Amino acid sequence: MAGKQQVVIAHRGASGYLPEHTLAAKVLAHEMGADFIEQDVVLTRDCEAIVLHDIYLDTVTNVVDVFPGRSRSDGRYYAIDFSLAEIRQLRVNERVDLETGQAVYPQRFPVGHSVFYIPTLAEEIELIQGLNKSRNRNVGIYPEIKSPAWHRGEGKDISQIVLDILDRHGYRGSDDNIFLQCFDADESRRLRGEFKTRLKLVQLIGDNQWNEAPTDFDQLRTAQGLAGVAEYAQAIGPGLNHLFDGMDATGKPIASTLVKSAHELGLKVHPYTMRVEEVPTFVGSFDHLLRYLFDEAQVDGIFTDFPDRAVSLLGERR
Ligand code: CA
Image (cartoon, rainbow, N blue to C red; front, side, top):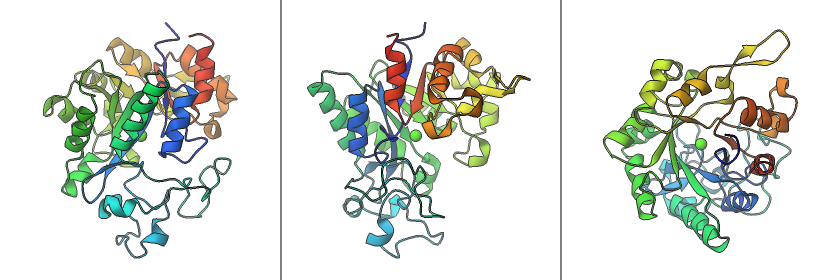
């Protein structure tokens, strides 16, 4: 059962090699053979859907230099306070830690080198569909609706806007090559219930202390919680840590029941995020981590910043 059913999701593109969510990072992911390429989606002031991980612009762009004084009282620069025309003026850089001003991953692409821009969701879909045509491939998209409750508080319905864009680009059925993901379980239910979307849905699972969504993720991971998820979703996206319940006396990880419980409900499992810089000590190396996930944990796919490594490993058996 290993092999073809297991997919590689390029997390923010091939973000281990190029700044996240740039079209360059998406081209590289396509070339590396990822099965899906991820888009995080937030809205601009003029309700344009752009591909950006945070609701903030300041960790991955030069917004502080281009638009000084446009932060909110918390000092942050919010994408939703800028028009698309303004965001077009920004350059994207490798992610930096706002406290230190240093790269979050110092071994990656140099901060401030070359030139990259924030794409709209539509532009990125056109890129991937264009490459699918010119390279005779069928790479899927994997958009995430970011912070829907927060967007609603700002007076915008991000789900409606994203679904409209997806529909215009041919993504509307359960067989279309897309997974649509969200952390907010109420919003996921709304996508299936109110919007009646037929797209495959992924319920992301976070940790409650992140305050990522008004969702009780501890409850979601219980048998009862997962059964509820299975009413509207086709997959779950747990954190890597959710696959383990500590270690045994020899230092080997003890698998949690999450994958097994999800599979019994017909839910696929796509854990995040595999990075060469963040390999758990018990597995020793990145390749060992990938082998553990695909062979022992039996996951159905992984989010990774290094899609080439996972494609290479799976390629041996595809
Ligand atoms: Ca994401």
